Length: 131
Image 1 (cartoon, rainbow, N blue to C red):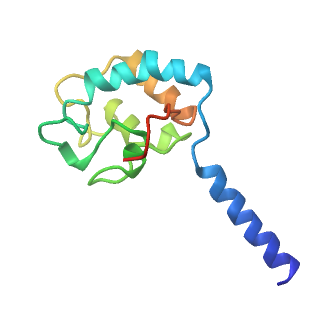
Image 2 (cartoon, rainbow, N blue to C red; image 1 turned 90 degrees about the vertical axis):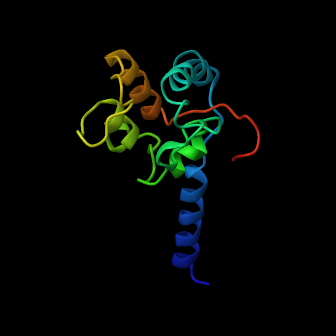
């Protein structure tokens, strides 16, 4: 195998490894547990969690993996890129066809919390095997 091919393979493997979520820092975990999780529980889980009576749009927001996988419309968020995340577009009411939650708009501070969390890479504390 030539050197260029080996370098290319190493680059691809290194990129794939960097895509995996790193262990969140204590500060990231605190931010998630104090600001993000309570917001998701209060405003999203009724329709978008494993405990929802009827899962809407095939979208779960109760795990990082589920958010990345997304629902019928695709991924809910792209870690590190709030500007391209459907979740931010929906909660920001930027699209008349995609406004969540549907009955009452989130406060600007709540949208900012989710935006910052995604910008940070959407850190989510480990809770066991991915679902």
